[in-house]
Image 1 (spheres, rainbow, N blue to C red):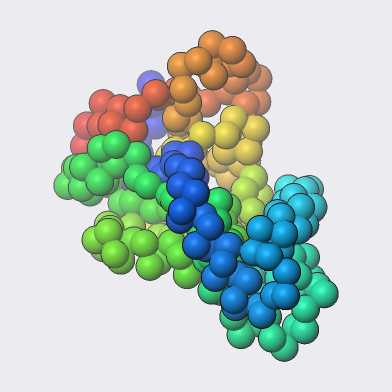
Image 2 (image 1 turned 120 degrees about the horizontal axis):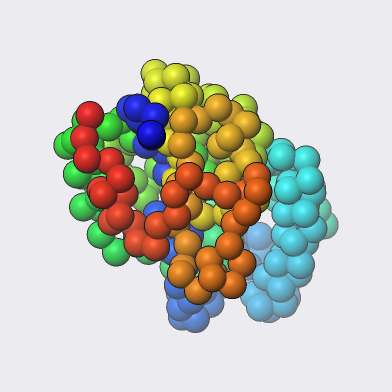
Length: 242
């Protein structure tokens, strides 16, 4: 028997949004990064160096469950060879452009309709996401007309702790005013999302995964969720209403 769920928290990357490669978009972002910092090298060479350093940062973040503030991300990790006083005021914009240099992020098919319907059915909605940007997500939610539907948005970039640290889940539940045992988390990563959700005492965890990935490497043991879905709209089959 499934627990009574009052709040649905959703992950962003590869869950509610997907990354799509667009070379013109990415090239434009690389040029903006070079312009912002006043680079004397080509945007491609600069961003390749940033990408390599970002991998080192991500390894550290995965191991420590810490998300560095954007100013520290750039002054300590990504461009320590540039003056900190130059990078700090533009760190938020640099992070935004760095993420654009990876590609465009678009909503999953039916995502808006699912959000509208879950809200209509009486569920409180929130977002919990590991992300290096503080401004991109609020701006996107506002631009897409989704801000009013998410009562609790907890980003590791602002909170300072990353999934699977249970602290980020507890903070999200606290902000939305629902006890953890009445919350569900919808993610995509078995090792990070399932373990973190369980340790936080959430009532349920759901993974959105491609059928091929499930067949090839099915989540087992502590990484096994309560439910696996293959399309975002399947959430409406699981949560008929409060």
